[in-house]
Length: 393
Image (cartoon, rainbow, N blue to C red):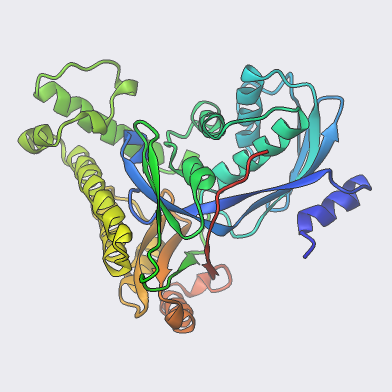
């Protein structure tokens, strides 16, 4: 099937694109809101994602169009705006600067980007950056390692766009393998790909879009990260531990006993953020073991538990997402699930029994639209399979 981005590229530039790159979206069943604190995460890439059709521009100009946004963006590889411009292409400007600092760029590109699913909750920003970097590095004859790709993508988000995210998204999109659970320690980047056991019950991945898009840069995402860091900083101070700069403080550095001994001294919000981190850390370990043993029911139960903690301890979730989560917990055939992504708008993900696929789609939509009838035209559901991560040049 001809991709729409390929077709639009031909119409715009009167030639075939030199190549088309693809990066999958990801879901994180257990381990959310902990990567920026150097915790452990689980993840699966899915068979939907971002495509980019592209060709070289020898004059160094980058000219890029997204099929999700109307404004075409343009800049030069050697003179990218140092400050973000406030549009969808900021992620790519940041990626250009990060790559150019390591490998001086000469050749630009013309490109059309296409996303397969609605925006919000599936790491679309990380997928766009990785897909763009794949194209820009290939055109300039640069061979990036997996770790370099993760670092460059993270740098674009953290330093240019201003989102205090961790490396969960990028790692899932690069390291994942079909029918394997990625189990990653974000402190030292060590990871394991745990295969689905032959005797494990079958599963698919359902994505339920609330109908509300979201932007991490304008949500309470950064505030939650700061609250969690503040809790870590305070706990270390109460315990008499050595500590340095606030920016270099992580909850991972706080021993669990220190948390237990001093948590009651924390302001309520900080205490809740710390509670989410420590319970999620334990859930991730138990979830990896459940997957290793082929127990998808237990893995799903822990994913639901993760979602509950995100609502009550991390205090994320719009009324729409909370309702979706509640519906999922009461729907037959769903092993487990939670918000996907930051959890302020966007979507929910669920691991489902394929035998219940039709009834799950029907039930979740009926119950959700009953609660939010004005979102009937924007709500959507999608059934996906697990997939391999991006293939670098």
